[in-house]
Length: 307
Image: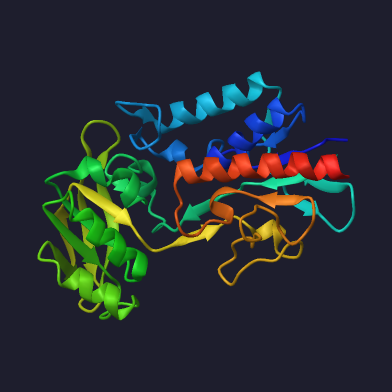
């Protein structure tokens, strides 16, 4: 029997593990298919407090993990297949192995929607990004592309004009899905232009110092493919919360994010808490995820004390 099981190992999950470990709860952490979360596909992290000069994303998450382990957390490189929150103790299944626990902290995060290109995966963190707030600073005086047509694409494109020389929005359709005010803000910016009815079909470059060099863009009306030099591509086609195994167990919103109570990480099931990007569809930052991980661990400790 475990006091607390943490599902997910990004900033939220590992911060929860640090706090739970310090509270003598002996947390068990299932790291999932991407140990360390989205930061492991980020190169330089310059906006996490305490690291002047920045730190590599994988290195930062390794420090999180080691700190959690120092306080008694057990981390397993395993992926949870299904859960049962219908009765206490709660049950977690990894393949056919069953784990029982008195409380749960879910920090499975969200995954950025990508184009699905092999070259895109290879160049992620080397000119290809899914977070303008995280990586925009590295593209000062550069020419970059933003893929998408919704509010997030308009917001990212507008934000990136603070750094880039030019921002071109690449959109599959001939009109945006974004709200009117977001469209006007983006289209009214002299640094922003649009390639309508277009999609990126290939990316060229190599991981490392050279990074992304150009992309092939297909015109969806004519079928023509043209190569365009660029210093960066930002994906802004949304995120998918990693919540599929919780669908019949917890209340989710229409987009699939776990609903938590106001000013709390409590979910619709008492004793089950959610932290980080799995419940935060607004900020999506490492530091805010870590904050909610801290909250979840404290709330789980109080829950156990009361039961």
